[in-house]
Length: 146
Image 1 (cartoon, rainbow, N blue to C red):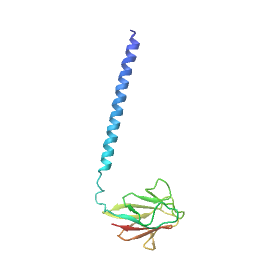
Image 2: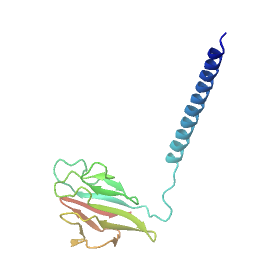
Image 3: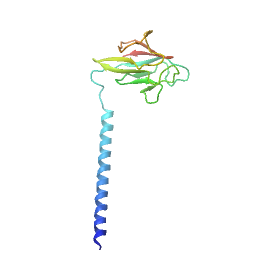
Image 4: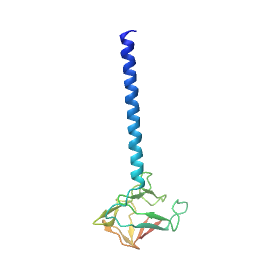
């Protein structure tokens, strides 16, 4: 046998072994991530709150009475990459954001065109949320629940 064929065969075997090891480790990592995601506890310090849909425009996927779990970093708007997409022509692409500060939820208007109402008043700055607060974005109204 020629030495080049022997060397070529050895490198082929080494390449296949490395490829299988890489695939095996990638699958193992994905499996671990999937298990961790399933059993992940709630964020420490974050209260267990949600948003109840009170009013929505006609044709919206959100239905009256629907409950949306409130999570830190959650955004609402018309763009598809928001956590919750609102099919409301009066809602901006990125309208509001929720986050946890001092173990309390905060709402922040993201410079939306039509603004956000909190309990009927304009939301001018980051504000701590309370149970039963009413949030209005365009024709969509949400109530904070626990």
